[in-house]
Image (tube, rainbow, N blue to C red):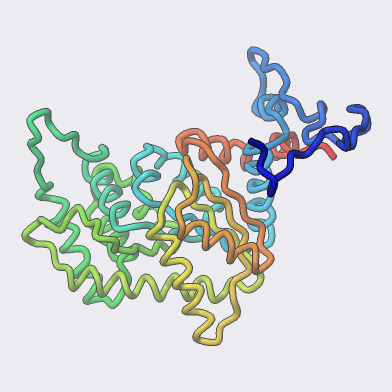
Length: 322
């Protein structure tokens, strides 16, 4: 029975035009090319399709290059996924080459980084029987470092970097916080979200961690408050915690009469953004900033971004044809 309220639309009135007159979404000049044995980095990027993540990654590299040339701040945000992707040597190299001005990391990242400096390894596999333990040295030494930082009136990131520098851990060269301290790169550490791998340790002091974490929040706000001329947020992996803290720090600046930072942003994410990340991307664009979610596995995206930064010709090969 036909529904009188919704009569069927007849195709006779459909507007037609030649397929050759339509404007294509993707021109053939932007198609991928073949990759040949022995190709250079620039040739490899030239072979990528000039659309989607390849173009956005190249655009992010271009903005990072411009920021470094103009001495604008580049903040890298990191949570668990980045810390456990075994990318420390690559990130350290970017720090040493001057591509990263500051870092904002979760407490989990700080703990993982501390254990890397101590053992050269990441984490603990849970045994088949479910046996799991809390590392004795991690909680004991981290708490000692934080208490020393409390006495010196410094933040959490600086306290851990200083402690590792003075302790002389065997694998400090693989530590982000140690390297940042040596290079005078600010690192703010942000506990929260109920995630705390050292909570079960008998020497853990929540009050000390909270106090130093609050100091680092104010430090992050201070960095953002001096970015009215521009800057870039590079988020390595998902982190509702860090993006939420970043937004709070931006709002804190506004509430204290400081100019809002003019941020561009590249979010290297392996899935759709969470609500906090969507909110941040919206605010970034509303303020006139360039903001992209670049999808993919971090263990591939970050090395590709580094290759683009270190090879300017490769970056040019990712630009979309008009």
